[in-house]
Image (cartoon, rainbow, N blue to C red; front, side, top):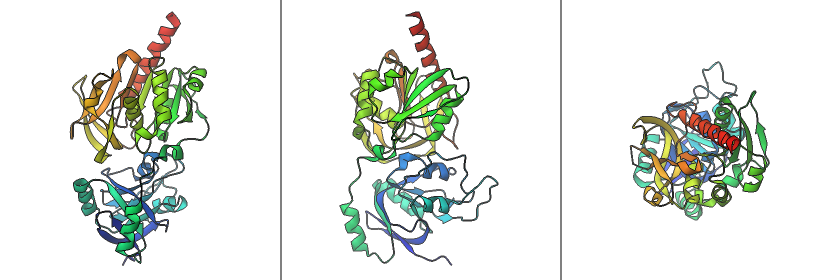
Length: 367
């Protein structure tokens, strides 16, 4: 029988006893849920989960281990992982370590054996909330006192962005893209390379003048954690460079583009996290099944008069999922077209970015 050696305390006062795996440390942070059935390695290593405790709604986690090829970042920064059943004996010819080993190496605690269905329903009903993963010896009163004192961080992008530029090159590249790293997932870089792009990844606070000095064919704004209003350096870059070169933003990049054009963002009740969100392309009428991970969204009503046009909406809650400014050769989506594992419905967006850069190059050649 599993030893009940860890305790989870939620902001609403609920307590859950379970069994620890991963690191033995405590975690005090925001708790959110993810509805994906596969891809726990990509979730754990996604920088967008920095400072968050993730509850997996799928009941069995760890059964295929961790593989060397599937990381989204090499230094995971998630705060904690909550699962119903953890399997520490993976069955997968590709696996090189267990999920618990990955978590332990990076100081991330996990808890299993808790009622994730009940926790998920609480979050859906009450919204994302603060939570503490700790020893069972910590009293409920002490835990709630620590939870009440916790303040959401506003420096998470600076934590996960690269500290200096780095290159991801591909043979016979047709385009040079600058990626502003706010917590970029490695599969985005892989996708851009597969479409014939050399990628220069730069820190989130790189000035617009530095970006222009390398004469890129396009600018990519990455995903990342936290409140988009905190990332003022990227917002300022968009204001300076819009119309000067094609720009493509994903997730946090989508939100920062909206702010740069004068629209507003807001924090959602419990966000979108998982690989099963239906999105309608308003330009084609087609519905895409998408992978998502975000707490904030663009206020659709605030787009009026900004020059941005809504291109995609979420069919579950009608939130903004895509925008464009055709005049400025700029577009963005809230979801992840590079999702792996996940739906491949939205990979056409990379083709669109390629087409914009091709047109921009031809325009410069004829100027």
